[in-house]
Length: 255
Image (tube, rainbow, N blue to C red; front, side, top):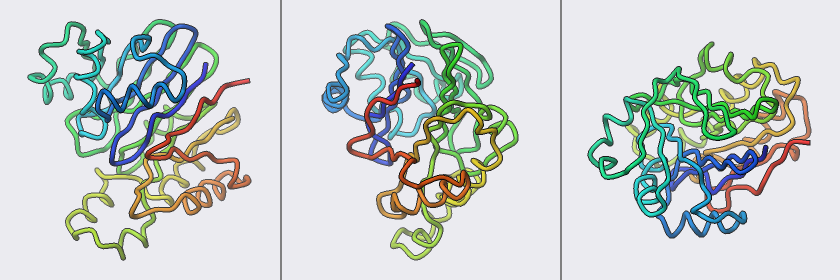
């Protein structure tokens, strides 16, 4: 099992998980041409993507899903709530599957465990993906943690964890007040400190990879995100990876 990011942030998101010949793309917030180029960067042909699974309907996560699926015949999985929002756009796709936010399902060799999160979308979820031995937890786009979120992520071997903003940078930045309120709300995005607090409450005894993701380009810095998470784990900040908006990150494997 291995995983890599095509890019992470408000301009687009995509995370590829691979087990054997199964390749699942979590979200696709890039145009088709851009997605193909980002896949090529990690050595993946677009027609070999087994399925796309969607976290929620915000454009930076879903805008490229239907065009990519239409071009390459890729099956798409999304919650019934998300599907209700995008039904018209997805009606032309031949393989669309709805699921409840607590449903466990399999795509090829990958078990997918969705779990609901507080975010300003219709039925948003995040995922734990597993090959039966290794567990990858993906958590971005939520305003506050919950006991269920933390139970879902405890004991993972790898985590891709939202560190969207630094509270001081957001408060003193030039975003409109209404946008600042949305980002910092319980249905917005995790700040560095909140992400660190969540991390500290997990069982991290198996953790081999930790990636800070969905960093705001205006209201955060990689060093601040790394420092917050490193304090929670008492580890070297350089051990923590960063999911870049433009470059994502390369393949991470379990040994």
